[in-house]
Image (tube, rainbow, N blue to C red; front, side, top):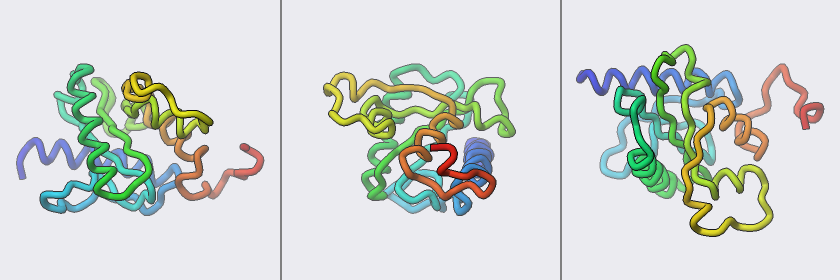
Length: 158
């Protein structure tokens, strides 16, 4: 196995561990599916996850993030999912701290997760937004994605 594949496996596994303990107990790394990429993680109905965890991810600029978000959206379409989330590892944050890795979505996706009643202007909807993975998961859960957490009374939180 190549070094870059090893790095990818470690990153994807870290995100899967976080997702399993935060509402997606069936999350798992997706086996390579050939020419039609469906994202890196499966078992999260309605959500596609693309994970980038090497040094390039830690140093990625706006242009590369935009390219990866476009890739994530293509995977979302291939999978027939509602939402695509790009995760990039942060420098100095190892797998045990994946909750603080960056989650990237476009403005339109964020607005939809927050329950916006009107679509955003196209130029704003396309703007990449960056938040922690833990915050992205909270937004997704607030929008109805994921399973109820066993120790949380969902009605008391709402």
